[in-house]
Length: 258
Image (tube, rainbow, N blue to C red):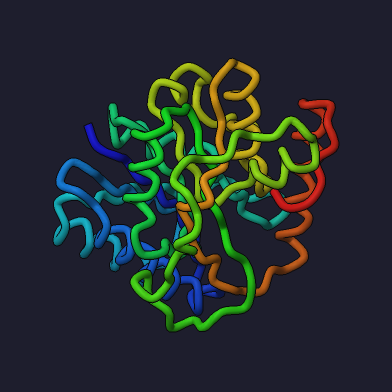
C-alpha cells in the first residue's frame, strides 16, 4: 500500500487569482513525486467552473489523480461555510486503505523530495502522525515545486512532540500533515464539528491522536512553501471561531497559528 494525499480546495470566482494558479502548481508538484502505488485526491467544495473544468481534465489524464465534487452548503447569513474537516474525511474514504494519509493545503507548494522525506521518516522511525514544516512569508509566486529546496541539514528522524503547551500548538497546525491509516481509523478521522469555521481541525486531530497514545512527531524534513495571499476579515473570524471551540475542548491555551 502506498501513500494517499488529500488536497481540499474551495475557489469562488472572486478568488480565482492567484489561488487557482497555486492549486495547479501544488497538484503538479505532488504528481511529480508520486510512486506507482501512491494516489492524489482533490476534494473540491463548490469552486467556480474554471477550477472544476481543470479538475475534470486532470481526472481523465492522470490515473493516480481523482477529483471529488461537493455541492454548495446552505449559506449562513449569506456566507457559505468552509467544510475542510468533512472534505478531508471524504478524501480518505475515496482513497481507501493506505499506509498513511497526507493532508496538504492547496496553497502549500511541496519542496523537492517532500513526499520521499515523509516516506523515509515513516519507515526509519515509526510513528502515528507527523506534522511537516510549513514555511510562511511573501514569496515569488512563479516558483515551482522543483525550485523549492529543503534545508539539507535537517535529519530524517522526526522531533518528538513537546509537552510544553505553547510548542505543542505551534507544531500541531495544519497545511502539511501525515497520519498513518491505523491511527486515523482509531480516532475516527477529523471532527466535522470544525466545519463552518476555519483552522484547528488538524491540531485537534493531532491532539486526539496524542491523547490516545499515538506517537506524534514534528518532521522538519517534509517542507512546503505557503504561497502568499491576502486574508480578509471573514478568515480571521472563522479562525477565531474554531480556536475558541478547540480551546474549550482541550482546556489548554491555543496560541499562535492553527
